Length: 271
Image 1 (cartoon, rainbow, N blue to C red):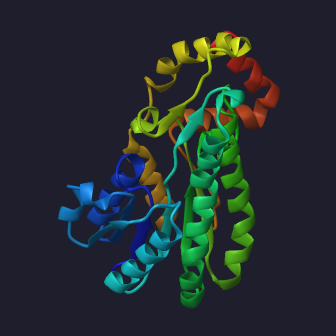
Image 2 (image 1 turned 90 degrees about the vertical axis):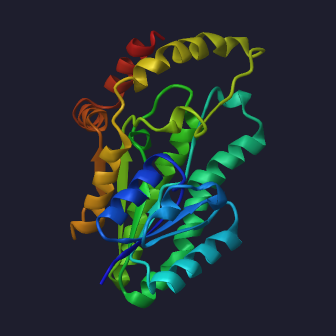
């Protein structure tokens, strides 16, 4: 019997690549996005349901889950992939943008998860896979909002696993490093206020170095394969790293510690 995965944020990047990968592996795929009418590739594939889900819209969440169940009978995996990165000095962000960052990356993830848990409980099975980041375990300058959301995803996932284990479910975290997607484009919200002169030195240095941070980024397929591993390995493993840089930073953080990472970042960014 075919298994079914529901993917949020499937219009591009990791989400879209994952949808295509699972479909090629013989899965049913519920590929959700804010504007499904714009999708021209996934809706041509067999056993793929392209439907609307905006993590900020509770009705769309419920409708997408019910449409998926009606189409395929059951959902086995939830991949919480939708999200974006807000960077810049905290003072430069209006409150509405702060709320949007946390509502999208954290509250939206919680709302989608809460909506599917009754289905998983009924089936006494199901896996929640949350796409976090290497930035959920360590930080870069100007990322207080983005890193705050990913640290939250890590904590949510760690604790939630105890709950879902009560009915046979699992929670897993995938932690990508730098990935060659549109994260630096439409998935990237950079804010700066040049009147805040005290921050302009660090802003300019980060902007000048940013291209070096992504020039050796891994393709999205690297993350997709790790997501597939997490979905199919049958293990109770919590964390899965994706990308050589993620594994390197994890090693450095684990064995050399926080102060070393701070010193390394300051040297790299010339702070």
